Amino acid sequence: MSVIVYIETENGKVKKSSYEAIAYAKGLADQLGLGVKAVGIGENDTFQEVGNYGVLEVLRVSNLPDNANALQVASAVAEVAKDASVVVLTNSSRGEAAASSVAVKLNAAIATNVIGLPDTVSGFVVKKGVYTGKAFVSLNLTGDKKVITVKKNSYDFEVSSGEASVTDVTVSANEADAKVKILDTKIAEGDILLPEADFVVSAGRGLKAAENWGMIEELAKELGAATACSKPVSDVGWRPHHEHVGQTGIKVSPNLYIAIGISGAIQHLAGVSSSKVIVVINTDEDAPFFKAADYGIVGDAFEVVPKLIEALKAG
Image 1 (cartoon, rainbow, N blue to C red):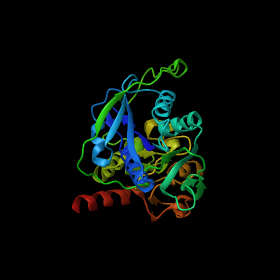
Image 2: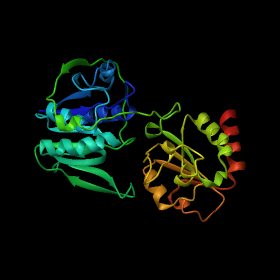
Image 3: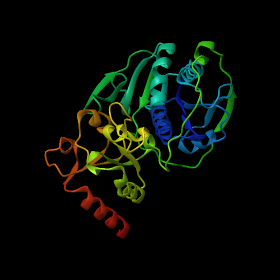
Image 4: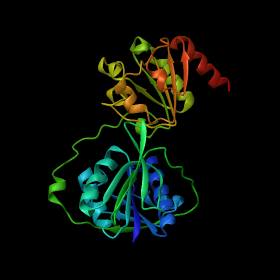
């Protein structure tokens, strides 16, 4: 028996959230007295790097493409993990989609968006976020097999020195899974991709016009952050749709989320409330966002943001 963790990649590189899942799987394996193995998909030469995070062996599914769809990922992981006690994935869109199918295929209990290692004294009790991060619930996963997705930025990891061995494996071809095909992939521009960002600078209609976004981009650059926006901003074309965060956009869980000129409608809060620290800048002291903020500044963005940029450059 072992703990199996799925390695998710983007453009041939292991995603940061996967390193968190790997570290979580290693911690869980140590807690249960089991070994840990990782499974990756496609002809990727970077898998051995996960040895720096405690994994000694990677099972590389070489007969599937790098851009395998979630159904193919689920079938591959379930086949490789048929003798595993716990399967760990990231709580990304692909990881969460695959996790439910893995649980069905393995007849396993499942918990998504998990925070921290389980309490194994009185069962297998995990803590997870619910109601878009507004509350937490403890679940006791019963059964011999468990599937877990790990919430982004909820588990710390340390880099050590090591290199994992890579063993090529093949899985059974499933024609039904292959009927879903990825015909085209459009990569969002920018140095830092929004779903993986630790810091996010977001703005809304309070910026008044698309040409005023220069100071938002400059602040993000000084912080090493990704840029984001509210839905009305992307709807009118001020910013691209891949920057829209919220209930109907991208859900983010950065260490720092700065909201500038965004009122904080419930649909927007649903996508950002899992952020560790929220800073709100708004001229309206009654803006709903201030109720969710850790820090708030009542002021004009066109005065506050340049001063923040100046302070960052000076410091």
